[in-house]
Amino acid sequence: MSGHAVMQKSIMGRLPKRSSGGPGGFVLGDWRHSTGRWGESKLQTYLNADSSNLGPVTVDTRTWDADFQHTVEWRRGHNLVAGGGFRVNRISTSPSKILAFSPAKATYTVANIFVQEDWEIAPDRFTLSVGGKLERYSYAGAAFQPTARAAWTPTNRQTYWAAAS
Image (cartoon, rainbow, N blue to C red):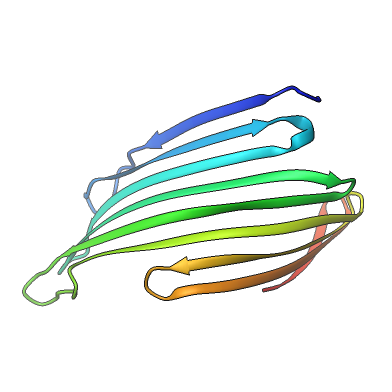
C-alpha cells in the first residue's frame, strides 16, 4: 500500500446511571492514520467527569488524558513504537462536620514519552520487546521505567509471557 493513506476516526460517549446518584460521564475520541510503508499513528483522548457522595464527603473528579503512538516496521520482524502522553486530574472535595481533606482541591499531571522495539524472533511463536518510558509526575518528579518482555505462543490457544520492569 505504498503512498496510500487510511484514516479512522471514532468518538464514543456515555452518561452512566450511577448508584450514588451523582452525575458523571465520559467522552472517548480515537484517531488512527496508516500510510502503509511509513507505519501507523494513533491518537486517543479521554475526558471523564464524576461526582460521588461518599457519606461524610462529596468527591468531584475530572480527568483529561491524551496518548499518541507511532509504529513503524523498520526491518522485517522489527517494529519500533514511540509516543507520549499527558494526563490532568482535578479532584475537589466538599467537607462535612466529621471529615475534611486538606487541600480540598488539587490538580496533578502526568506526562510521558516512550520508545519500544518488538522483535518477532519466530513468526507467530516468539516475540521479545525491549523499551523504556520516561514519566514525570507533578507531585513526585521524573522517573525512568525500563521494560523487557517475552511472549511464547506454542499453539493458537496458548501464550506464555514473562516481563521485567
